[in-house]
Length: 244
Ligand code: NAP
Image 1: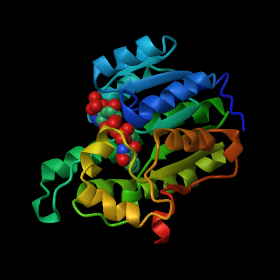
Image 2 (image 1 turned 180 degrees about the vertical axis):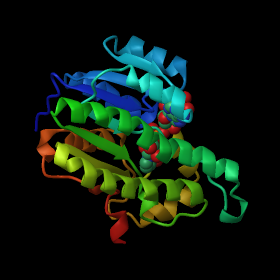
Image 3 (image 1 turned 60 degrees about the vertical axis):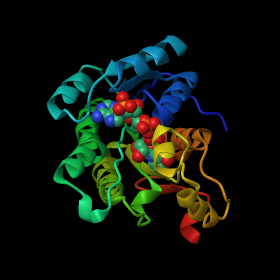
Image 4 (image 1 turned 135 degrees about the vertical axis):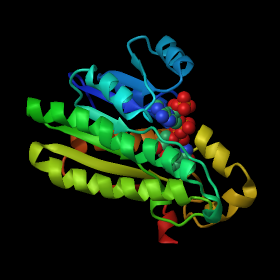
Protein backbone atom coordinates (compact mmCIF):
# COMPACT_ATOMS: atom_id res chain seq x y z
CA UNK A 1 0.00 0.00 0.00
CA UNK A 2 1.53 3.29 -1.05
CA UNK A 3 0.87 6.42 0.96
CA UNK A 4 1.64 9.89 -0.36
CA UNK A 5 1.34 13.12 1.57
CA UNK A 6 2.55 15.43 -1.22
CA UNK A 7 0.99 18.87 -0.81
CA UNK A 8 0.23 18.26 2.88
CA UNK A 9 1.71 20.01 5.90
CA UNK A 10 2.25 17.91 9.01
CA UNK A 11 3.08 18.64 12.65
CA UNK A 12 4.48 15.99 15.00
CA UNK A 13 4.91 16.83 18.69
CA UNK A 14 7.59 15.12 20.76
CA UNK A 15 9.56 14.53 17.58
CA UNK A 16 13.01 14.85 19.12
CA UNK A 17 13.27 11.25 20.22
CA UNK A 18 11.66 7.84 19.92
CA UNK A 19 8.36 7.30 18.16
CA UNK A 20 7.73 10.93 17.20
CA UNK A 21 11.12 11.27 15.56
CA UNK A 22 10.53 8.21 13.37
CA UNK A 23 7.02 9.36 12.42
CA UNK A 24 8.33 12.79 11.41
CA UNK A 25 11.06 11.20 9.26
CA UNK A 26 8.54 8.95 7.52
CA UNK A 27 6.20 11.87 6.85
CA UNK A 28 9.02 13.69 5.07
CA UNK A 29 9.75 10.52 3.09
CA UNK A 30 6.07 10.40 2.05
CA UNK A 31 6.20 13.98 0.76
CA UNK A 32 4.69 16.05 3.58
CA UNK A 33 6.22 19.37 4.57
CA UNK A 34 6.87 18.37 8.16
CA UNK A 35 7.29 20.33 11.39
CA UNK A 36 9.03 18.44 14.19
CA UNK A 37 8.28 20.03 17.56
CA UNK A 38 10.13 19.05 20.70
CA UNK A 39 11.64 20.33 23.91
CA UNK A 40 15.37 19.61 23.63
CA UNK A 41 17.13 21.70 20.97
CA UNK A 42 20.02 19.22 20.60
CA UNK A 43 17.56 16.50 19.50
CA UNK A 44 16.06 18.83 16.94
CA UNK A 45 19.49 19.85 15.66
CA UNK A 46 20.49 16.22 15.15
CA UNK A 47 17.17 15.53 13.39
CA UNK A 48 17.77 18.50 11.10
CA UNK A 49 21.24 17.26 10.22
CA UNK A 50 19.78 13.82 9.47
CA UNK A 51 16.86 15.20 7.41
CA UNK A 52 17.74 18.69 6.12
CA UNK A 53 14.23 19.38 4.77
CA UNK A 54 12.70 18.89 8.23
CA UNK A 55 11.33 22.06 9.86
CA UNK A 56 12.32 22.03 13.52
CA UNK A 57 10.39 23.81 16.26
CA UNK A 58 11.57 24.13 19.85
CA UNK A 59 8.75 24.47 22.40
CA UNK A 60 7.86 23.24 25.87
CA UNK A 61 4.28 22.00 25.65
CA UNK A 62 3.84 22.35 29.39
CA UNK A 63 3.84 26.09 28.78
CA UNK A 64 0.27 26.59 27.43
CA UNK A 65 0.60 30.22 26.27
CA UNK A 66 4.18 30.03 25.01
CA UNK A 67 3.70 26.85 22.99
CA UNK A 68 0.35 28.06 21.63
CA UNK A 69 2.03 31.19 20.19
CA UNK A 70 4.72 29.03 18.58
CA UNK A 71 2.20 26.64 16.99
CA UNK A 72 0.13 29.60 15.74
CA UNK A 73 3.17 30.79 13.79
CA UNK A 74 3.57 27.54 11.84
CA UNK A 75 0.82 28.26 9.32
CA UNK A 76 -1.61 25.67 7.94
CA UNK A 77 -1.38 22.11 9.28
CA UNK A 78 -3.32 19.29 7.58
CA UNK A 79 -1.94 16.33 9.52
CA UNK A 80 -1.31 16.44 13.26
CA UNK A 81 0.32 13.80 15.45
CA UNK A 82 -0.06 14.59 19.16
CA UNK A 83 2.75 12.31 20.26
CA UNK A 84 4.63 14.13 23.04
CA UNK A 85 4.11 12.62 26.46
CA UNK A 86 5.86 12.07 29.75
CA UNK A 87 5.74 9.15 32.14
CA UNK A 88 6.50 9.03 35.84
CA UNK A 89 5.41 5.99 37.76
CA UNK A 90 4.57 6.14 41.44
CA UNK A 91 2.47 3.79 43.53
CA UNK A 92 -1.03 5.23 43.95
CA UNK A 93 -0.53 6.29 47.58
CA UNK A 94 2.64 8.21 46.71
CA UNK A 95 1.31 10.22 43.77
CA UNK A 96 1.86 13.94 44.39
CA UNK A 97 -0.10 16.83 42.94
CA UNK A 98 3.09 17.95 41.15
CA UNK A 99 3.31 14.59 39.31
CA UNK A 100 -0.35 14.73 38.26
CA UNK A 101 0.02 18.33 37.06
CA UNK A 102 3.18 17.55 35.10
CA UNK A 103 1.72 14.50 33.36
CA UNK A 104 -1.72 15.92 32.65
CA UNK A 105 -0.22 19.22 31.38
CA UNK A 106 1.80 17.43 28.69
CA UNK A 107 -0.19 14.27 27.95
CA UNK A 108 -3.66 15.80 27.92
CA UNK A 109 -3.87 19.59 28.15
CA UNK A 110 -1.21 20.20 25.50
CA UNK A 111 -3.16 17.99 23.08
CA UNK A 112 -6.19 20.26 23.49
CA UNK A 113 -4.02 23.36 23.12
CA UNK A 114 -2.09 22.32 20.00
CA UNK A 115 -5.16 20.74 18.38
CA UNK A 116 -7.28 23.87 18.88
CA UNK A 117 -4.77 25.94 16.94
CA UNK A 118 -4.38 23.42 14.10
CA UNK A 119 -8.11 22.63 13.87
CA UNK A 120 -9.11 26.32 13.65
CA UNK A 121 -6.98 26.56 10.51
CA UNK A 122 -8.33 23.29 9.11
CA UNK A 123 -11.91 24.53 9.53
CA UNK A 124 -11.13 27.92 7.96
CA UNK A 125 -9.55 26.26 4.91
CA UNK A 126 -12.40 23.76 4.59
CA UNK A 127 -10.13 20.99 3.32
CA UNK A 128 -10.49 18.68 6.32
CA UNK A 129 -7.58 17.03 8.06
CA UNK A 130 -6.44 14.07 10.12
CA UNK A 131 -5.23 13.89 13.71
CA UNK A 132 -3.62 10.98 15.56
CA UNK A 133 -3.38 11.14 19.35
CA UNK A 134 -0.66 8.82 20.62
CA UNK A 135 -2.26 6.97 23.49
CA UNK A 136 -1.17 3.71 25.10
CA UNK A 137 -2.31 0.29 26.21
CA UNK A 138 -2.13 1.87 29.67
CA UNK A 139 -5.48 3.53 28.91
CA UNK A 140 -7.14 0.12 28.61
CA UNK A 141 -5.36 -2.02 31.21
CA UNK A 142 -4.72 -1.22 34.85
CA UNK A 143 -0.95 -1.32 35.35
CA UNK A 144 0.76 -0.86 38.69
CA UNK A 145 2.40 2.56 39.25
CA UNK A 146 0.49 4.02 36.30
CA UNK A 147 -1.98 6.27 38.17
CA UNK A 148 -1.07 9.52 36.45
CA UNK A 149 0.06 8.14 33.11
CA UNK A 150 -2.81 5.64 32.74
CA UNK A 151 -5.39 8.24 33.70
CA UNK A 152 -3.89 10.74 31.25
CA UNK A 153 -4.10 8.21 28.41
CA UNK A 154 -7.66 7.12 29.26
CA UNK A 155 -8.64 10.79 29.23
CA UNK A 156 -6.88 11.16 25.89
CA UNK A 157 -8.98 8.34 24.41
CA UNK A 158 -12.18 10.12 25.45
CA UNK A 159 -10.83 13.43 24.19
CA UNK A 160 -10.28 11.66 20.86
CA UNK A 161 -13.93 10.59 20.75
CA UNK A 162 -15.25 14.05 21.59
CA UNK A 163 -12.98 15.61 18.96
CA UNK A 164 -14.22 12.99 16.48
CA UNK A 165 -17.81 13.91 17.25
CA UNK A 166 -17.35 17.66 16.98
CA UNK A 167 -14.86 17.79 14.12
CA UNK A 168 -16.24 15.10 11.82
CA UNK A 169 -18.69 17.53 10.19
CA UNK A 170 -15.61 19.56 9.14
CA UNK A 171 -14.07 16.48 7.45
CA UNK A 172 -11.47 16.21 10.19
CA UNK A 173 -10.83 12.64 11.37
CA UNK A 174 -9.42 12.05 14.85
CA UNK A 175 -8.14 8.69 16.10
CA UNK A 176 -5.91 7.48 18.87
CA UNK A 177 -3.31 4.77 18.61
CA UNK A 178 -2.70 2.57 21.66
CA UNK A 179 0.62 0.70 21.56
CA UNK A 180 1.97 -1.80 24.01
CA UNK A 181 5.60 -1.34 25.10
CA UNK A 182 7.86 0.07 22.36
CA UNK A 183 11.64 0.04 22.88
CA UNK A 184 12.23 3.80 23.10
CA UNK A 185 13.76 5.81 25.95
CA UNK A 186 10.35 5.79 27.65
CA UNK A 187 9.75 2.08 26.97
CA UNK A 188 13.17 1.08 28.32
CA UNK A 189 12.82 3.19 31.45
CA UNK A 190 9.60 1.43 32.40
CA UNK A 191 10.01 -2.11 31.13
CA UNK A 192 13.70 -3.15 30.98
CA UNK A 193 13.37 -5.30 34.10
CA UNK A 194 12.49 -8.85 32.91
CA UNK A 195 10.55 -9.38 36.15
CA UNK A 196 8.16 -6.71 34.89
CA UNK A 197 8.22 -7.31 31.13
CA UNK A 198 8.13 -11.13 31.36
CA UNK A 199 4.53 -11.49 32.60
CA UNK A 200 3.37 -8.85 30.09
CA UNK A 201 5.04 -10.75 27.24
CA UNK A 202 3.63 -14.03 28.48
CA UNK A 203 0.11 -12.56 28.30
CA UNK A 204 0.67 -11.28 24.75
CA UNK A 205 -0.47 -13.84 22.14
CA UNK A 206 2.26 -12.68 19.72
CA UNK A 207 4.77 -12.85 22.60
CA UNK A 208 6.55 -9.64 21.64
CA UNK A 209 6.48 -5.88 22.15
CA UNK A 210 5.99 -3.36 19.34
CA UNK A 211 8.78 -2.17 17.04
CA UNK A 212 9.07 1.51 16.18
CA UNK A 213 8.16 0.59 12.62
CA UNK A 214 4.84 -0.93 13.77
CA UNK A 215 3.85 2.37 15.38
CA UNK A 216 5.02 4.44 12.40
CA UNK A 217 3.05 2.28 9.94
CA UNK A 218 -0.16 2.44 11.95
CA UNK A 219 0.15 6.21 12.40
CA UNK A 220 0.70 6.79 8.69
CA UNK A 221 -2.33 4.62 7.91
CA UNK A 222 -4.52 6.63 10.30
CA UNK A 223 -3.30 9.92 8.83
CA UNK A 224 -3.89 8.79 5.26
CA UNK A 225 -6.97 8.46 3.08
CA UNK A 226 -6.51 4.67 3.30
CA UNK A 227 -8.34 4.97 6.63
CA UNK A 228 -11.00 7.37 5.30
CA UNK A 229 -13.82 5.72 7.29
CA UNK A 230 -11.83 5.16 10.50
CA UNK A 231 -12.82 7.87 12.96
CA UNK A 232 -12.91 8.15 16.75
CA UNK A 233 -11.30 4.79 17.30
CA UNK A 234 -8.64 3.80 19.82
CA UNK A 235 -6.60 1.46 17.66
CA UNK A 236 -4.89 -1.24 19.71
CA UNK A 237 -1.33 -2.05 18.70
CA UNK A 238 -0.59 -4.68 21.32
CA UNK A 239 -0.20 -8.07 19.66
CA UNK A 240 -3.50 -9.23 21.15
CA UNK A 241 -2.57 -8.49 24.78
CA UNK A 242 -6.08 -7.21 25.53
CA UNK A 243 -7.58 -10.57 24.47
CA UNK A 244 -5.87 -12.35 27.33
P1 NAP B 1 10.26 9.33 24.40
O1 NAP B 1 11.29 8.49 23.76
O2 NAP B 1 10.39 9.70 25.84
O3 NAP B 1 10.07 10.66 23.52
C1 NAP B 1 9.11 11.61 23.90
C2 NAP B 1 9.37 12.89 23.14
O4 NAP B 1 8.40 13.86 23.58
C3 NAP B 1 10.75 13.45 23.43
O5 NAP B 1 11.30 13.99 22.26
C4 NAP B 1 10.44 14.55 24.46
O6 NAP B 1 11.38 15.58 24.48
C5 NAP B 1 9.10 15.05 23.94
N1 NAP B 1 8.42 15.81 24.99
C6 NAP B 1 8.13 15.38 26.24
N2 NAP B 1 7.61 16.41 26.94
C7 NAP B 1 7.57 17.47 26.12
C8 NAP B 1 7.18 18.82 26.29
N3 NAP B 1 6.72 19.29 27.46
N4 NAP B 1 7.28 19.66 25.25
C9 NAP B 1 7.77 19.22 24.06
N5 NAP B 1 8.19 17.97 23.85
C10 NAP B 1 8.10 17.11 24.88
O7 NAP B 1 8.81 8.65 24.29
P2 NAP B 1 8.25 7.58 23.23
O8 NAP B 1 8.44 6.25 23.80
O9 NAP B 1 8.76 7.90 21.86
O10 NAP B 1 6.70 7.91 23.34
C11 NAP B 1 6.00 8.64 22.33
C12 NAP B 1 4.51 8.49 22.58
O11 NAP B 1 4.16 7.10 22.54
C13 NAP B 1 4.03 8.99 23.92
O12 NAP B 1 2.77 9.58 23.76
C14 NAP B 1 3.93 7.75 24.77
O13 NAP B 1 3.01 7.90 25.82
C15 NAP B 1 3.43 6.77 23.71
N6 NAP B 1 3.69 5.37 24.05
C16 NAP B 1 4.96 4.92 24.27
C17 NAP B 1 5.17 3.58 24.58
C18 NAP B 1 6.54 3.02 24.83
O14 NAP B 1 6.64 1.90 25.36
N7 NAP B 1 7.60 3.70 24.44
C19 NAP B 1 4.08 2.71 24.69
C20 NAP B 1 2.79 3.20 24.46
C21 NAP B 1 2.62 4.53 24.14
P3 NAP B 1 12.47 15.66 25.70
O15 NAP B 1 13.16 14.33 25.74
O16 NAP B 1 13.33 16.79 25.28
O17 NAP B 1 11.68 15.93 26.94
